Image 1 (cartoon, rainbow, N blue to C red):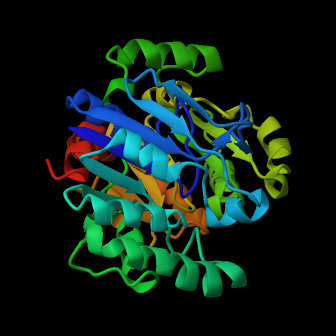
Image 2 (cartoon, helix red, strand yellow):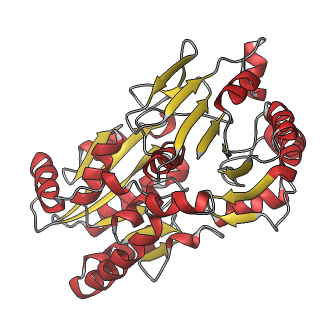
Length: 382
């Protein structure tokens, strides 16, 4: 079967472990022929957003083909509206049996609609990564872009959709309330972890990372990270560690600070048990997860939430309404996120052996729900 993934709503980043990378990878593993049609929006070596210089075609190391499309002129406007050069021609050339849209917020949905009218046998699936926390926050986005422009395109593609997935429960609701997609076709499809990325030699990797960072094997390690802005509450986590004042408790941070949070580096430098690694590639993040005992994300959501559960880590998460899907069987603790004392107490629970072992056993079972080998099947109803 030929599957085309459309990554035209936002970025597509080569060699990452985002859902845009993982679903094509595991669809190839399932025996399908796969092409990703993507924008020029990517990340640079520092993990910051950038635009590639020109369109291109190449084969990804995981067996799928990538076609990068240039923006139509005027480029400045079409980077926002997401009109591309050659969308219709590429669809004709690829002739897919299945199309999977990664988000439904791009103007070339009109071109896709024309294609689907001519080829009604093509099955179409879509997902949504926007919610009321990460999107629709300023006036333009909340009152024009999402409820008028993107809703218009969402409704154009809706009649052709077999399923429209929200990657969190909140993002399912966003589809219904913001885009007016029928609840009959909305389903939850979690983000997860690349099965192949989890080291088979976990104990060896754990030892190597801890040795590199000077962390004794008997000490407890917390992992956090992502794009660290004020809403991630890493500053609250650091204060909780200060309150714990435990020389056998360490924090590994994989990620980059936004400018307003750069001041935290001074606090980190004064705390030898905090190991700030800066931006890390997917392999390094995975190795650090394996080296850790607990994941802690006391702020806004990132894909590291699901990845840490998929690796089998007990976790501490900020409680968000409709973001509790990471709690499969009591494998995690939810906190307010902005309460230093509460977070400190949650960390203490994860340090005490009988309590920690119970969370660890539950986390090992919960991990199976977040493997991309399983998620990829559900994404195309297989």
